[in-house]
Length: 324
Image (cartoon, rainbow, N blue to C red; front, side, top):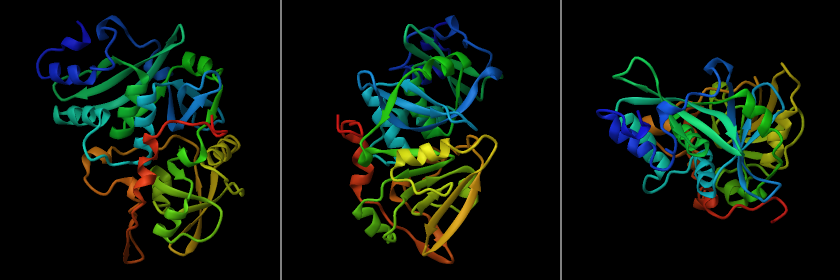
């Protein structure tokens, strides 16, 4: 049966979900590898390929130094950056809408697969858990769209071994520093502009501002509005350098993060595994992560909104670190 003609209520869900992604009938394509062979990855940031400056989303393997670049379109690249920033748009964007539709139809996006590369084209699938079905529903999708939706719903992202091997050969470079927003081990960081320093009352010290923290990092006390001072004893000069320092953590060892928050310094150790991503952006109303509203600490409320430009930076054209 064609994925765009699923019976019952799923007709609407499939039509909306696949408006931009459905090119192959779901029943005519199975996963290219057994689900248990896939490797869960963490979305770290968006960059550009060294050949042609095409946008790529960078995926981090857990416990290792490998990065997996996946080609995406400019629109999807901006959507992924906006999701990493936690930007709350005035009206729902396409990928926000798809996530809302899934939830409204009593379904859940559980997993996203990047399962094949065919003649340079990446293939992926959405795995939905539907209340009226015993087995999960898998729908063919472009990985770029699937990843953008996953970031908004908390779905995990998994890559097939063949894709891991072939995608490693793609060269990439970071965006211009003021456009960089990077996530690693559940910590999302960006460069602290003068506006950010003033808004968050940050000290005049080198480091990177935290816009979101999930998983063990959040559990250890790291919050939005903190300033990351060192990673494994070194001060990251840019968000991309933060990622490189995390990647350099020896295998089976923990990442050491020292940070400033509320006038004091703390140090935590984190595993390099991929942290769970709660699907709170759709399920729980509240201030967008881009506003950096950590909530209460030490009995007093501390809410600091980031200037609008910090959230809107992802809507500009993508530029490499050397300005190209």
